[in-house]
Amino acid sequence: MPRRLLREPHVLAHELRTPLAVLAGWYSLVRDADISPGGTPAEWARAMAACQDAVDRLNLVISQACDEANSIKRLQGPAYEQFNQLLQRTEAAIIHSREVLVQLQQRRQDATDTGEAAHNRVIGRRRTKPRPVSGHAATPP
Image 1 (cartoon, rainbow, N blue to C red):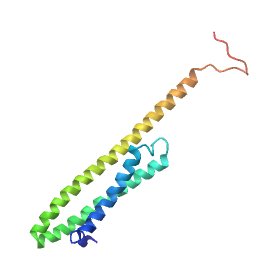
Image 2: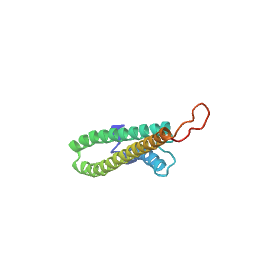
Image 3: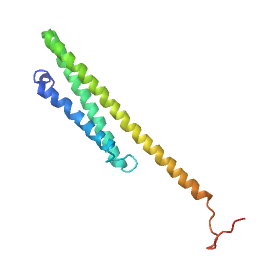
Image 4: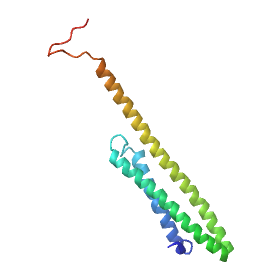
């Protein structure tokens, strides 16, 4: 497939758009609160894995396209220049997708921290309440 990326632009477009669609889909689920790090840890883990796989796939496609571009550069200068412009745009998209992944991970951490703080407040309240002894209400001192 690497030799087809630049010769058939629709192949390159498909290879780049597919992982970006995965990232965009999971991001919209989080943004719209359809999934939440605190409410569905398994789903959240699946989202993070899917996002990481998408980023890895984008990196692979870019590496393959760079290899092909180097081959073309040796043969055709203008085609390489066109590819270089496309590669710069693609790299910007990769950087953006990494930023989205970091935002998703930060939201997860924030939700986890918020959940732990709320849990600790509840536990703290339980400790301050007097407990009845042997079924009788405790009398204040």
